Structures are given as structure tokens and as C-alpha cells.
Image 1 (cartoon, helix red, strand yellow):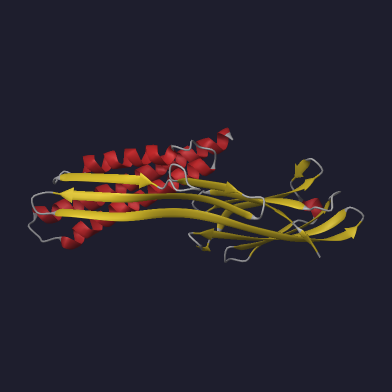
Image 2 (cartoon, helix red, strand yellow):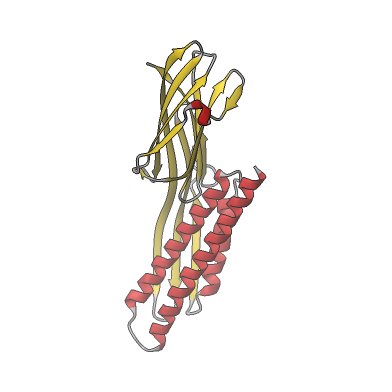
Length: 251
């Protein structure tokens, strides 16, 4: 778990750097436009977009950290840092960026982590934002919400080959914000008595990437129980971790 936590913290730091780079670049363009006397509305709109995009990076990086075992307060701490950076970067007047983490169940401090035993795994971060920008020429108030959610759906079947030997077939679907997503890493294991075991090449193990967020896993294993339990663990391309357990249906 220590290694995962360290990896997650690196993701958060990278997200802060990316967000700061985005906002610094857009602010330079906006300030340059005002300096040369242009009515640079597009640059100003791009600057607001950059703040939204930076906020998205922070929420995503924070969720990746928490999903890998980081503290539950990671999202709040990182957003506070981000808002401080926004205020310091805006030199043309006053910038105030406030946030409200979603607290309605099943969220806490803007985070929802669910490792279900019914084939459902969810890692989600949700916060509402209020941005106020003011100077001698501009006075705007922009509100927006960011919801980053990775969902893993798992279902399996099995058939008895002979004795305790069983052929297990698993279908996994990975989603980002409800849309099919690609996994960076996806692994599976099965339960035999009190042990969780990882199927290897000796189990005739295959993993098929269908290219649309669907993954097909197949293996043969000695499983004593008639209840064939499986567990799937996945990292999406954003480094957000999810896992889900399921009981396979006999064919």
C-alpha cells in the first residue's frame, strides 16, 4: 500500500503542476491582450476555461491518490492549494475561487469509494465551484461542477470441467463518467477456500481487450467450493483505481 500511496501523491503533484502551467499560460495571453489595447474577450474566456480545466486536473489527481489509499481529505487539501495559486496568479484585479465538496451520501468530503461484492466498483470525486473575477474592466461570476467517476462492472460464469476443476469466464466493463474507457492495468484473482489466488499461464489464462472498455478474462482453476468468487482490479488511463468482486453463475 505504501508504494500505491506514493504513486498517487506523485499524480497529485503532477496535476498541480499541469494546472498551474495551464493557468499561467492563459493569464499571460490575457494580460498581453490588455497591454496592447485589444478587446481580448476570447483570451479572457480562455483564461476562465483554463481555471476550469485546472480544477478538473486537481479533482482527477486527488481521486487517483485517494483510490490508491491516500487520505480522505486529499481532495479538500489540494483544492485549497489550487485556489491559493489562482488568487496569486491573477494580477489584474481580484480572483476568488471557492468550492463545496459534495457531502450527500454516499459521498464524504467529495469522495465516494465503493468496492462492491455484487460486481460493482466505483471511485468518484465531486465538487461545486464558484469563481469570481474582478478588475477595472471585468466583473464576472462563474459557477461550475466537476464530477470525475470511474466505474468497474464485473460479471462471471463458470462450468465444471472435472472434479474441482472449473472453467471461469469473466466480463469486465470500465467506464469514465458513464462512457466506455480503456484500462491501463487490469488484473483478476479467484478465491479457493480462504485464499485469493492469481491465475497464471498454467491456468490457461487469457485476457482479451475488446478496445471499447470491455475486457474478457478466461482461466481454468481448481476451486473446491461451488461458489466461484472472483475479484477484478483495474487502473484506468488516469491512474484511478477500482476493484469489484462477484460470484460467478454456473452454466
